[in-house]
Image (cartoon, rainbow, N blue to C red; front, side, top):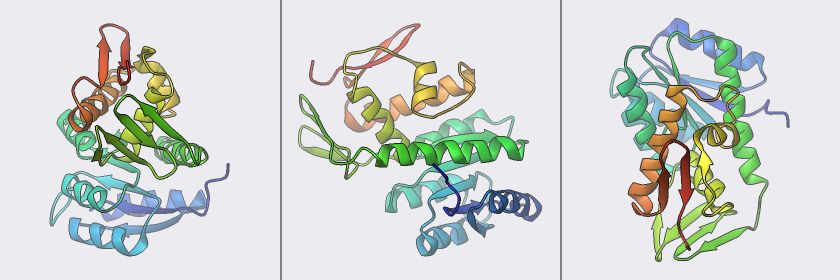
Amino acid sequence: MELGGRRVLVVEDDVTIAASIAARLRAEGFTVDVAHDGPAAVEADTSAEPDLVVLDVMLPGFDGLEVCRRIQGRRPVPVLMLTARADETDMLVGLGVGADDYLTKPFSMRVLTARVHALLRRVDRSASVAGARIVLGDLEIDVDQRRVARAGVAAQLTPIEFDLLVHFARRPRVVQPRERLLSEVWDWDVHGTSAGTRAVDSHIKALRRKLGADLIRTVHGVGYALEAGS
């Protein structure tokens, strides 16, 4: 599926880096908006309704973590967060507030565009499964409307959290290795990296926090399995 024509918001306070990212994405066929600080980023997300946000953590006004909280609180949108190479905490906290993926600086434009395409392919793949409703015990998932509730209580999930839950729900009680999750949910080409497995673990933790600690079972040394409905 061609992904050109989609709208991407680039949020980066370094004008040179922002211009380079925007130029590369425009060359890939995307419409690109640029913001250089936190308040401008939230305003641009509201006015432009981008299909994806490339978001740096370090921003003036307020930081990228707060930007991510605010835009995800308004509507679910895929977020690719840019973090400092030496600060793993940025990555973990970013995933915790709703980022779908991350890149550490410095990064190549080739890798960035690959991650953008991968995130949008995942969104399209999820959208192509319309009208599906999954019920496992007290867990109810409306795939078409991207809504989830447990014991009648609705939960607000980020795009990657929702897709991860649906992946588990289609294979209840089947153990899913982290590498398979990275491949099939994140659409990553490189598997088994420690950073990748930490990303999986972070999102599992978020699902447990929002839907119950007993929802997903850890199989030590292997991966995770959905326990709802068992």
